[in-house]
Image 1 (cartoon, rainbow, N blue to C red):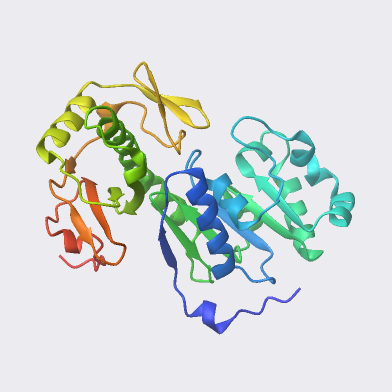
Image 2: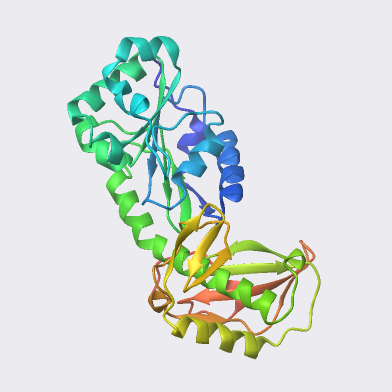
Length: 313
């Protein structure tokens, strides 16, 4: 099996993407990441991130038709036990999926390591969720490693790193902002529809760091101070938030529609540092008017919200 590296990929330290909210947008981004970053020689793909961050949807977008060993509601025991049926699997399959958190509940680490090594030796591809749990025993870098938190990081690790654990630490810490932003976004959308009479067909979700972005297809007469006040009041009610079904959440005692029902804080009291920009930001390139909600942003110049972080003091 060739381990040659493309100079083009070696020159890329990492690629960074917004982690969109909603299954459909994650599937679309996964498809795009597959086209941009995967080569046919890649045999070991490491996926890193917490439960509910969207790993499964991203994998399905990158590898259409791949049968996962688990989803959010059920486990496929035949797939989980594939690590003990080496010869049959290598004859019948070309790409395999492992979820380390589920896998370790049913098989031993040495069995998993042996399966992964044999799969790659037989020119098969293995996608490993929670790759940071496998790496200490496997002691082999993934060809491509993808971390998903508030943002999606794509990297081709070298002997100099990054390590899977360092990537996990990064995405684990940032995921809280994505959960907070999605929860406030859902509250804002319901208020816009229920109390301000704005039809959802006039706006759609987009992305910004540490916040949410709603793009309106036309400028409307919106009472920004009133909307900001109503959002703050809803957050102050300490509403519980939890999964209801694949298209809805429970917000307090009410069922509301949501494109990412597993990606929320547990209670609105966990949301801190929120503020609403009380003006539309015109985006000439997309011909839209942006409604922006921010979390823990000190920068008041909206043109600098996506600045590069230099580390300078």
